[in-house]
Length: 164
Image 1 (cartoon, rainbow, N blue to C red):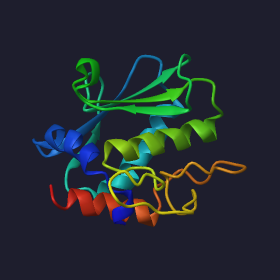
Image 2: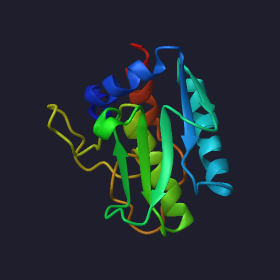
Image 3: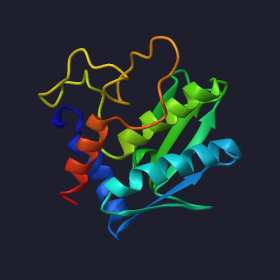
């Protein structure tokens, strides 16, 4: 699904995986079921990735964190921004667990090279895409959907990482 691919995002992640692996870690305060949720998300994604994904304690290529100060529900901060060595995936503290899980998945999509379906700054978009189609959509409607990447997301991720 080329409409979801963002080469600039992938360009940030590709050097992090130069050793054939991407590590995923957690900032202070992310524990318990949050770690279990992310671990499950990574395990479900691994079959589609040509690099090893691992959960680590300590410094990581991709770090999940929570913030009370965040004005949006989530934010993916790319490597190099303010000296970041890797991706910081920030989710607003205080969201319901289903919504926070969805935001973690969505922000991980950015770190793996995905963009929002409505973004046409690179000459493509997917008008009308919803969360039933992609984890990168915003239209949540009522209850947050199942905590997994959609077929279009997997196709876009494998398309990008196949070039790795």
